Length: 154
Image (cartoon, rainbow, N blue to C red; front, side, top):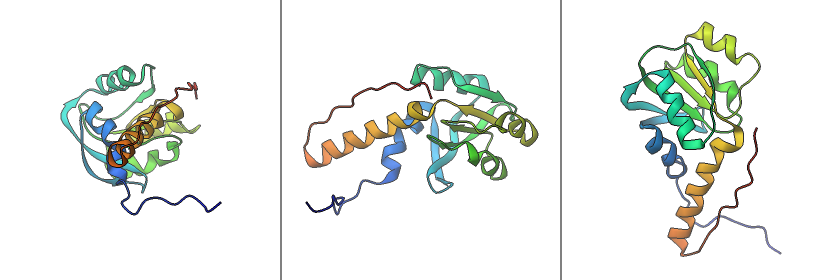
């Protein structure tokens, strides 16, 4: 059996991340760390309000180390296991960094770097992109799709 190959009209990565930007009010400005996105909030909010938006969207409270500037004006997102990108987010001047999993030094790094850090779960942060990708594939190629929810607390 030949290996699976992607169609010649690939779905842009940005289209699979739009759900985060729309739901959290982030206007994308650039790719962050080759796999994430970064941008400006359409309306600045407090770190606590941003964390509440994440909780409302995912149905779970994110781990939040709120040591950044108020209000939050810029944010970077790397879904899944992006905790190691925290220093890069601070270095690039973001007020807040959202990912799925923290790294052990995240608390102290956020405090020392003066940035808000949110970890909302590896699975929880990645499932939205998978659903957006499935919807785009379904729309583009006229196929039905179904997302099977297999919750994972990590």
